[in-house]
Image 1 (cartoon, rainbow, N blue to C red):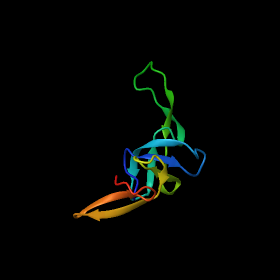
Image 2: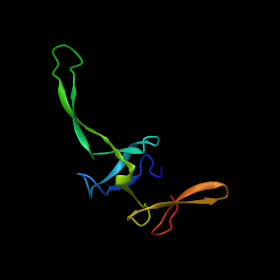
Image 3: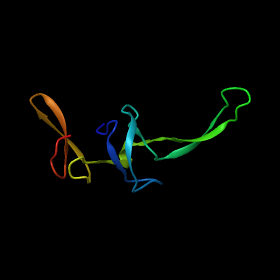
Length: 101
């Protein structure tokens, strides 16, 4: 999976199409990512102590990695990602400008 934590991404499909956000978590085995402020669902939270009120919180849900594009840190455009091996180290490469991440 080519998307990692703290990457800036653009949503290319779904209800939040066109929005940008930062990746909070990634699940490589399931090929899903959680993005800050995207795909929010309401969740009921029980009160912790007696006398306290319960709450309804908005929590981001994981979406498929195929619905996001990485935004290049150099050119700032949404792009596909390639790999280059230099001196036995693997680097992610922007397909538009060729910058290494």
